[in-house]
Length: 197
Image (cartoon, rainbow, N blue to C red; front, side, top):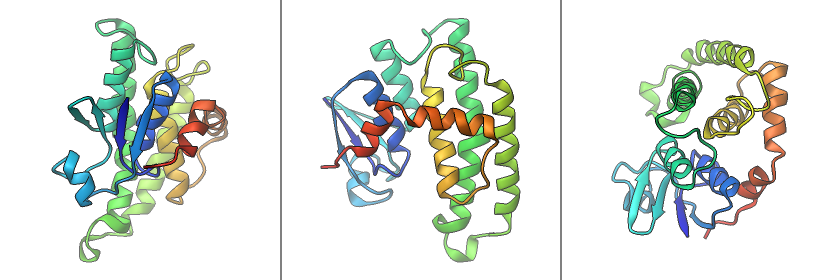
């Protein structure tokens, strides 16, 4: 059994959703970032972390990649062209979705008040909307990589949800409806309803 460290309303949700899709049992320790509990598993205090036996893994994308490879699901096989394309999509999402949202968060509540530049958030919102339009143009099938769901879908939908919570403008209808459909998956709902220990 795995243990996920991190609150549901954090990047830990990506790992929880992935585990639900894989049908793997896990428990959750709902530690907030930079808390003493989080620092037990990651000296930087970042969440999520994943306990797999005695091993501690960090970073949501590294964890979901590991889980996909370990269980042979929700990923293209390593060393294939399909995997390279999947990795390219994942890295693009980190650069064009996740990084923008994280920058907005830093200037909203993460940085000390004297280091925040609130005016930057308008340009970040416009940049995110542009990236969502690009993603909609690339979407050609039920999932980002075509007919097979991968952890790239989990990452993208999590970022879209994050943008809603952060008060960003709605993404375009095509990508919004796609994300809504993935939020209807039983695994997504199960991760949302998971009770932390």
